[in-house]
Length: 158
Ligand SMILES: CC(C)(COP(=O)(O)OP(=O)(O)OC[C@H]1O[C@@H](n2cnc3c(N)ncnc32)[C@H](O)[C@@H]1OP(=O)(O)O)[C@@H](O)C(=O)NCCC(=O)NCCS
Image (cartoon, rainbow, N blue to C red; front, side, top):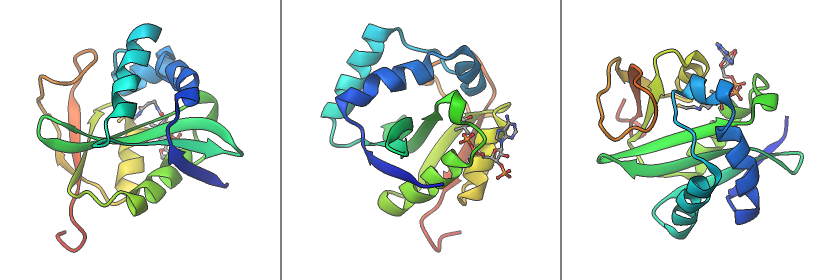
């Protein structure tokens, strides 16, 4: 499977909106989806912010997901989302492997709902370690869920 990462552009946003508006997906992610206007406003801020790394994931030229690195509550965090029709093909695992090659910031963190086993696997396969099985943060969007905190340390630091 040949995927590519490139910077997110405005034309990608309708597709990314649909991905996060999918009830199966947002339940899996324990995430509160944004309505279209709020989503577009949120992404306008992200696109204007040079401190955020934001990549679209392309398969055969089609946008199938996205991957971002941003700061929240003092942690450099990653997030990712794949359109449901493309789940289970290894796309997230391959995209994260590539993302980590181009994103030098460490340590990196990921906050994942306890029940989101696929996402746990993606992180573990890419070298992240489970740090906390009940991570508490007031900053997280979405319904109450038990969250796991994963970390990727600086290379060589364990
Ligand atoms: C989580 C998500 C990114 C996984 O994407 P994907 O491209 O399907 O993942 P991959 O195909 O690379 O699979 C990763 C691993 O999870 C496993 N997996 C996939 N779906 C699974 C499921 N429903 N239950 C358990 N394991 C699952 C795969 O078997 C694979 O493990 P393996 O290599 O040991 O076999 C995708 O489902 C998604 O975008 N979900 C909605 C948004 C979300 O949850 N984002 C992450 C928030 S932290």
